[in-house]
Length: 409
Ligand SMILES: Cc1cc2nc3c(=O)[nH]c(=O)nc-3n(C[C@H](O)[C@H](O)[C@H](O)COP(=O)(O)OP(=O)(O)OC[C@H]3O[C@@H](n4cnc5c(N)ncnc54)[C@H](O)[C@@H]3O)c2cc1C
Image (cartoon, rainbow, N blue to C red):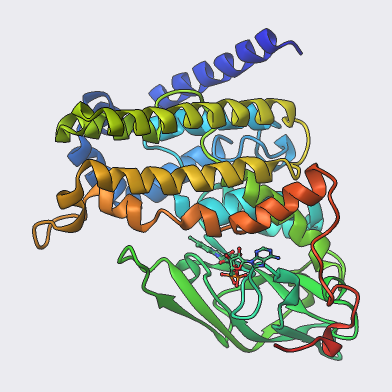
């Protein structure tokens, strides 16, 4: 397919979505978006009953999961078309929220690739229709960048089921999730990457205890999750025993690609900065203006690289090159957050009691998010060095040693 044919295909799909939205998105919702009435829109989208009815409609029609195969309710779309669909839904405030990122972007593709027919039947339809939320139970107090060093233990019982004990941390939305993507150690006599198994954990099982952690932004989206002798049926195992690392790579690649910015070329975070600079008068400063423009150029370059990557990778799984975009996106987001405080230094540190935190403050406090979540910038640099540039691997004396014999620091 030529670039022009692909563009036509993307535009045709977006036109079809607009037509579908006109006939299905409730009239007052459409009206609030057209009128730019933020208050009315906030009231509509804060109503859980209306939201869940809408997600049901969206999911049943396939628009929530366009990349999934048609047998599972999707449209078999490439990543570029799916991105255009997501963008149009965002425009109407009609897409699934960030809290569903783990389920839709990480869980769905991992279950599609590794799940049995019964697992697909059980988990995919409710995920597509927004009926069940998922969290990611990977990081532990002693295993973040070196994820394969995780020590949550899953011991097999005589009947083939499992007992899981351990602790996870930084698990976004775990306190409101029905299921968790869980990695646990099932063979500590093997080297660390070879003794892990992947499970789809029912978060309502006895012995699962999420405890929210308050973040710098004031929100508590993260959790510690304590797992105390949790009984897990073997039917919840995803992929072969002790090959959970291979399964997790599907999740991690999808995560990196999914955390690398919006795949559209157009107004972005730096345009909001420019707008704010005009309001605060900071635009009059040539130094600040130049800083905004410099970031704007980098943002557009990232957008173009993302669109290009999505077009080229539309028919395959995301690869290590996703780390390049994740790295750039993380650093750019942090710099945008920092510059925002320069445009309104006083507004960013003090605001009326009880009023909403200013946008500049929230962006600044959340600035590090994408440099850490989904693998830190240093780890992305390692991945780029090893898998894109072909440099020697990062030294790891534990790599080939049985996990049980590791040096504990
Ligand atoms: C917003 C957000 C949401 C998150 N959500 C989830 C979630 O839902 N589920 C989940 O499981 N986890 C989640 N995480 C956790 C995240 O994946 C980890 O924080 C991340 O992988 C880093 O691990 P760590 O915090 O243990 O840091 P560490 O691994 O201890 O790293 C500390 C520092 O050392 C550096 N470093 C470590 N190893 C190397 C190396 N080999 N080479 C160079 N530098 C190195 C790191 O870059 C970092 O600067 C989330 C994190 C954030 C910020």
